[in-house]
Image: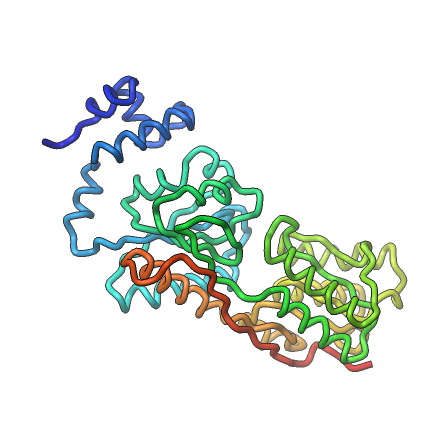
Length: 339
């Protein structure tokens, strides 16, 4: 006999209306009550009509790409697009259906990862854009659903991570500037609470200390990975620093490098004649900027492909949760001048 919402209400000790509102994600149900109702529904084997239709189809390995903070971004950047492309390259060739779920920190606090998977009949998910203080970074450890995080390690028996060695890569990029004769380096920092930003800053400190150099705190320009923030940050930097206080700008993303070049040009400087600039990511657009930007290519599309393959292997029991580190390449172009 099929389980009804009345059965769930009786078992959870709430009204039928509360069950209905909880399962349809109405905001007037407390997170604790919602969690109890979802757990009860799962335990009793309740399946809404849409989920029943999905379960009866041949696609019994539906997965999702969960994007956190996506709506806060002004534009879809090339990183997001390339990663999505890599994910879908795998799914279309392996008879897997992938949906996209958009969340933010507030939604994470109101709806657990398990509830998200249950409501959308998701067997597992790839999570991108998580910050170190996000609720899911703690909740994923308890999840029964397999998941793969991008660029951030989260503990848990069912949690894998696909990343690059950001410390090593940023150390290599910093060392390149030093080898080119640069000693006065300004770091254009990404989002403070992003794991990749923290690790890349470690790489910069590591290389500079190895070479007997210092990185003063006021030589770090903080941003949220926004191009315009980098542009304005560079202009603000030179309001309080002399022109000879820097020779190179070490950027934590290619979009930050583009914004940095824009800011320098607006101040009347030329790149690389007056200042050198390097980026990070390997976006295609860096081939066509003026000048073309030296960068770390982390092969973003491959990262999406490997994350999707790993998730599907976990769901099928072929691989256990693991940390998968992908290689990177230093791509030298025209944005650095030797001193």
